[in-house]
Image (cartoon, rainbow, N blue to C red; front, side, top):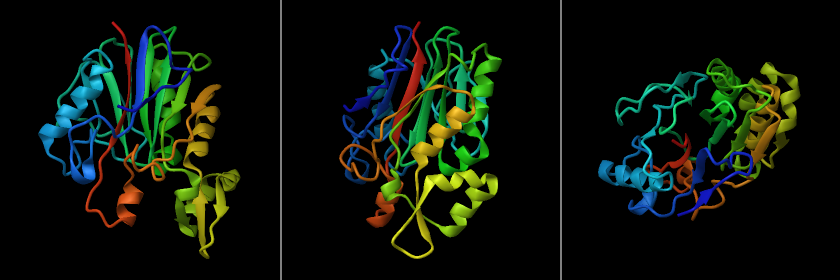
Length: 254
């Protein structure tokens, strides 16, 4: 099982991990650790994959969201079952024994912790949610639970790299309307009227802009590393009908 862990979230009272696609029971295009109940994979296999992933956390209950590419953040007070997922793109909690999980397949998962305050969070930062402010909203929600942004550490997990993220001029224009300085996250592509967007760097910038000084990134491309990660864009280019989702999760130890 592939699990990436960041230095800045490694703490005796916190367990976290950015899981790859290895070590599960799913087959075919979902091989193997597909943790996304929103995929067309067999539900029983997805549940088993999630259980296997949580073995790395000592069997901690896992909650995930019905992700909608928004800036919506929910505070988690108790675990919920698959099918009861709130529509949001980030979660915060100060309760031990609940794993906050984000599902991705090219978008950027972001895990947060203020270890001193005992407050954690997880966010799904696709381009739209990142642009709309999901990262800043997550930090604000952490502060409402007692975190201090000067102490918050954050890690941006595996996502699609700039080299493999081609976008059109309308996409770029939306970012420039929000802030002309966003031009630095785009480079021209060989195809006329197209660019390549650096999602990881943009997510890291939004963290810095929110006052988070301790930020780690992995530069692990979900598109390029087909044996390690699922990728929506790669599946689309291959003409596959669906794709799996990798899990990124964080929990406070009891």
